[in-house]
Amino acid sequence: MARLDEDVRREREAMIAREYQGIYPINEVFYIHSIIYAAERADTAFQRFDKAVAADLPPTLIVSTVQEALTHAGALSRFFWPMKKKENELTVARGNKLRDAFALDDTSALKWRRLRNAFEHFDEDLDRFLLHDRAGCFFPGPLVDDQALADDSIGHIFKLVDPKHGICVLLGEKFEFRPIRSEVRRILSRANEMHKQGGRF
Image (cartoon, rainbow, N blue to C red):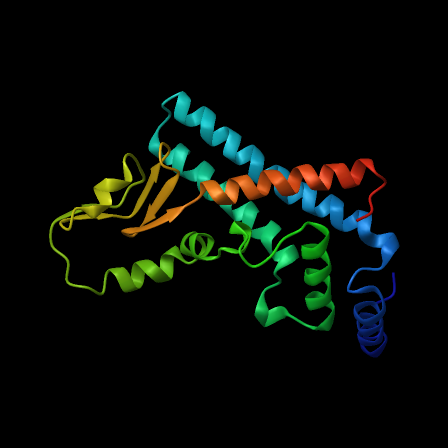
């Protein structure tokens, strides 16, 4: 396949953004397929999390399933809210069109980036965390316990998941993940309905 000329590409992007709100109608099915993939991967990881908790598996496995689920939820989120540094007329229009199709607004838990970013940029946050003069007990390994443990000023928790309250603790900061899980399920259900109806919004 010949590479698309840059001027032609820009022209097509502008036309699709302007005339079709970011998605050419016959291509809607491909976005639906991609959304289903990301949502299914996130939902499946959350289901593995439930099973890992029920089976009392090691904390490393339990925490990793939550992290995996949220990574896929992050990929799903970018269909609706593209990364700002990569935004252009086409991606902005596509995000707007998909948000309309899936009844999403800026209050959606799927737009929450703080928890996803905390996992994705853990290395940078660890750099800053360790710059502080800290004394007490350090817990660098993953934990599965009550989130209240993070309230102890002399205990420094790196990664903790509280299944009962649906909270992750990363470097002492608490984040809810249940609302993200609920939104993933809702979007997956809606995308599957669209697929059954012929792959159109």
